[in-house]
Structure formats: structure tokens, C-alpha cells
Image (cartoon, rainbow over all chains, first blue to last red; front, side, top):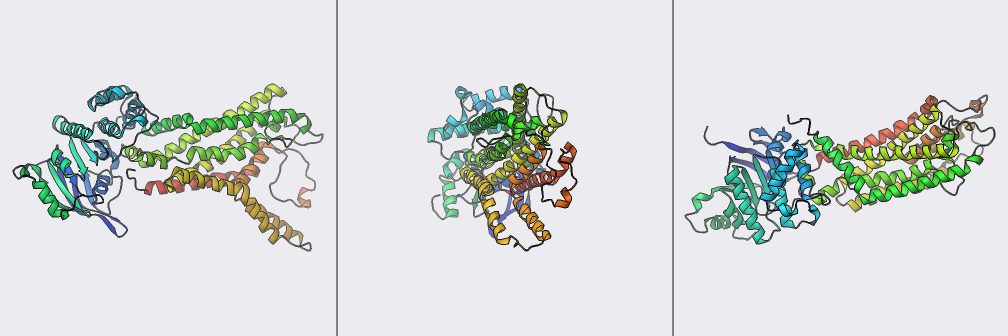
Length: 245
Length: 321
């Protein structure tokens, strides 16, 4: 049997007309690891994520999440997967609590249970002081943390974070990263962390997939790199020709 | 399954939220204020004129109650006129930003990543707006009936009551058509302002420019004085059918027939056809048969608009903003 795979992508391809967004992608993500999708904008990271969730159909190939095919059974997959889109949005005229309760209700969680969970999660992401504040008044960083609580309220097995730190100040980023690490280590969640920022991926992830032009260029075990200083930088530069992204 | 007594089906969760959003939004409050005021105005107008509205020998004379919805001395349009004019605005206001505002707020991808079918969202938005429109129109219609009852003191007969219910139903279908058109535009256009303008453009086209264009065509095609009776009639029919492409024309014909029981036909009639007819009101069933094509036409165009929005929404790729 070997190790348990949470997500299995095989031969995954997505074309938009003649443009190939994702090109024959094969990738397995293990249970409980933090997997980084690293690559410049437009490398196909977001498209891959959308296909994992069944939000867009692959041109060919299959996605299995927890053994369920995302394309044919998206509802079952979305029950197990929490997705935090880039620059997540909330209903501005509803409070943080109401927004979370709405998500919980869509997941079929009873109101009483949802209220308790929401309070606990808001405390955990450091928003317990703004429970009844309208989400429209939230800063970008607060919205992102509320997004994390929103993802967790459905009690997922996998969480997918798409560029979760873009637009947050450095201190906020560190808080956010600490939260993600805690979720992985304490709660045993499988985390997919997409980013174009090398340093963050290096700090958070156990394993990294390097993306460019829709292809997976390399899979790198970060624990192997700790011996070499700036190892990932070198690999990164090698693949992206030294240009900063 | 997780559907225990305390939880609701996700579809109705969305419907509930959409209804509360609609009812709490400013544009709805403003529109409802305008509509309620104009309705009260037209009711006042109808009440002051109802005495003179009934002429001796008028076949509609026995349907005094229905006059509340149609009577006007020209200073202010009647209730039915107001619905035909403001109804589209109500539909547009409830639908023009249904999908694109969710996309722009970044909530669309978040909601669709919850375990719900994608069509729940668009169906729920439609159902929620329809419920709001239905409650609003029936409440207004019954209010007018209630005030009228107090003022004129003559209770409506059962058939009059059913006629009003049927008229309000036609009103709901008419507003639902504009609602669906607005939802369709909200999927097609990224900016809420663009879709609102597009809806209003369609509405203006049909309510102002369409009749002008029809008149132009009419002038060009009008048969000369030597034309046979057959030619004149077929010309009349053709012009009327052209007019009927406008949803407001269908609505007006349907309401006229339902609220004026003496209307027997909506097309041109020859002298032979009228000859021997007693100018008496039609029973409700017969009136409904007269407007059946109009009613099915309106429902069909509503369904077509909804089908188009459904298709384009299901195919839309949802990305974060």
C-alpha cells in the first residue's frame, strides 16, 4: 500500500482554446503534508486548484481527492475540501459571525453547533474581538483570517489556500503562516499552499511542486534541502532563469 | 445524510438569505416606496372618478370593483398602467446584479466551493426574487381591494375577486420576465452598472422606441384606399402581431381582457363577426381563453430568458475576482 495519497492527479490537462493552461500534470499529495504550488502568475496553479474542486472541467485526465473523482462527484469532494480563494470576499453587510453561520448552513451544520464552532474558530484566527462587526469593515488581513475560519467551519480534511498571503503586511503574513503550520501539525490537515513567493513556500511547506507554463517542472522534498543553504533558491533560479517573480 | 430536523436544505438556506438581502436593500425600499405611493395615488384617482366611470348601458357596469384597477381620468394612470410601467423596473432592480456583484465581491467562488450544486445559486436567486415580487404585488392588489371596499362599500363578487387574482398573477409573470432578463445580463456583463444599463436600454426600447418603429413600418406598409377588406384585415393583424413582440403589449392585452369582462377579442373583428353579438360581459373562463396566447407567450419568454441564464451560468468559469 505504501503511503496514503490524499490527492491524485493523473494526466491532467486543461486547454482554453489553443492555450494550454495545465499540461499533462501527474502529482500525488500525501495525507497530512503541506504541499506548496510554487510558480509565477499564470503558471497554471489556480487552474489546477479549480479542477481539484470540480469548479472547472479538465480537458483530459482525472483528479481524485480522498479517492473521489472531482469532475464527476464535485459535491462529495467539496464536502471534504475547504478552499480559500485568492482575495476572498464576504457579504459586506453581514457580520463575521453571520458570514460563518451562512457557510455552516450551506454545509448542513445545525445552527447551535455552528455558533459554537464559529466562536471557537474566530478565537483561533484572532478575530474574537470583531465577532459582531460587519465584514465590510474588515481589512484585507482580517478578511483573509476570516476566510481561514470560513474554510475550517465545514471540518475539512484538505484545505486549499490560493495565494493566501497576497496583500497582507509582513506581520500578518507571519501570523497567517503560524496558523497554517498549527493546522497541519495539530489537526493533521492536508494543506495545499499556492504561492509565487519563494520564501513563504520554503517556510511553510514540506514538499514543493515547481510550476511553469502549465507544467510541473520538479517536485522537491524540502527536508532534503535543509543541508544546503539557499538550496531552493538555486533550484528556483535554475528553472526560472534567475528572473524574480 | 446530514439533513436532520434542525438544518435546512442548502437551497432554502440560499433562498432565505437572498430574500432578506432583497428586502433590506436600499433600492428595494426606494422602489417599494415609489410603487406604494403611485398605487395609492391611482386608487385615489379611481375612487374620485368611479362615479362618472359607469355610463348607462356600459356592459362592464356590473363590474364596479374591477374599475378600481382601470379607471383614470387622464391626470394619473390607473393601477394596471402603473404595474405595466413600474413592474419592469422592479424586476430589473432585483436582478441586474444577481451574479456579477457576487463575482466582484469575491463571494461567488467561496459559495460555489461549498457542497452545493452550482445551479442552486441561480435557481435560489430567481425563486427568492419571485417570492418577493409575488408577495409585493398580491399585497398591493389586495390593499387596493381593501381600501376600495371601505370606500365604495360594495363587496366584490367571487368572479371579480378571481379576476383580480388572475390579473395579479399575470403581473407577477410580467415582472418575472424582466427579472430573468436582468439576471441574464448580470451573468453576461462583469460590471453591475453595465447590466443595469443594458436592462434599462431594453426596457426603454420596448416602451418608447418600439411603437415608433412599428408606426414607421405601418406607414410604409399601409394598404391603399382600393385595398380589399381582406387586405386591410391582414394588415391590421400583421401590425398587431408586430406589436406583440413587446412584453408590455402582451401584458396590457392580458390585463385589459381580465379586468374588462366585455372585451371579447384582441384582434380586429369584421362586421359579420360582431353582428348579432350581445354586448355582455364574458365569464372568467372565457376571458382567460382570450388571453391564453398572451399568457403562454409571456411565460415562454420568461422561461427562455431563464434557460439562457441557466446555461450561461453553468458554463461560466468561476475564478476569484
